[in-house]
Amino acid sequence: MTDVYAGRTRNGRMRFATPTAVRDFVHGVHSVTALGTTLGNAELFSGVRIKADAANAEAVYVGPSPVGTTNGFKLSANEEVFIDIDAIDKVYLISAGGGETISFIAS
Image (cartoon, rainbow, N blue to C red):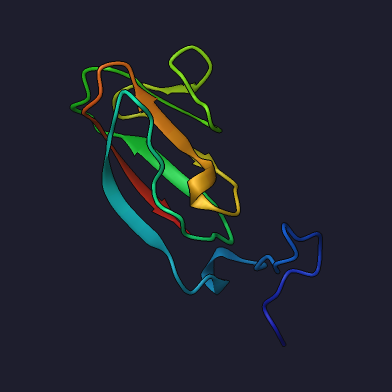
């Protein structure tokens, strides 16, 4: 018995049937700038969960490039979002003043 999803794939890669089938993940704490930033360049099988730090004074905005404070998905302090995506460098973050912090975990 294999633990591989037989349905549609993204970019030709296999999707795992259950989250426990994913063997590797990346995580970290990241400072968001006023110019915009990504979280690295890891390929993903499941996606990424991003959480704004509880001490943030301003919102963090999430979206594809170019994301801005007027077109991004707003994360206020202590809010989080999960994005089902195949590469972490497709997710951009920005904050109006810069210096806000997010935590992320991705697989």
